[in-house]
Length: 388
Image (cartoon, rainbow, N blue to C red):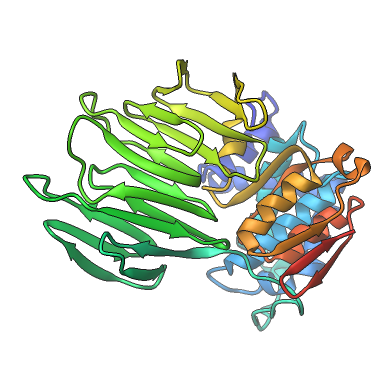
């Protein structure tokens, strides 16, 4: 949310940050109840999700995500979401979500509290597809493979390297002294996402349909890994041993930083986005907040300001679009939901753009509903999505 002098916007920000006192929260609720548009949204939310108004200590994440998606859809028409004031409205929607989920229950008078209601998990709609999850395949240097998910915990020894698999993450603890170096490959399928801590302590988040090839221990003058797809890197600083991310198109040289590399072959460009620190793409040194975009068709590299929140939305659990056409959105949906897309890219499809933010924890139907509300049409046949 932008910094504003509006006291209600300040209260919204404080509420989202968990810094509201009971008195401030009560003032915020009073304001929301006194505003006609917000009262309408609260009523719609109560009608659609009565189960979350029960006296319960926690709320299922999927229900919360559904509620936020419904709110955003109500707030912003005719597009999926209105982008100009997206942060303010997202904050307001989040507050309304929290109010319906329990804050209103805590602060309203006793007589106004809703009666407890039995809660049951709503089954997924027929012909729906669940979102992706933490899963990957680890191919060891000897060619053997291990299937990974968020539940499996185990320890593997590769020479002097200890590999721990736990809580949806692979972590290496290597003693480099005189050991033979092998190369492992972490492959994340469509419908998956996974995290790895490399032998030097660097952490990498891999998006769907991505691969990372890396050594079991770093030795020599540089730390080299190979990436296909998309990864966010939080690199351990070591000025004497540059970190290199090699892709099929070009290399990204790092000294110690946080950055995102998107190198899917079915996209229009390879994008390197710097969050903090410094990276070099060919002869170009990026500054924080910049993106180097290399177009596949021409090989030209363009450096421009980046919307960091949008670039790393996938890592934080969201789809975020800004002037994206339907084909752009469908490519992301195809990877995350592991579906095939049958789409006729007409001039109209290319011209119409969408903007907004929606949780990646929602089933496919929620994303399609928001797009259909803005003119798109879909027919799901098994794992094939036909875009009309």
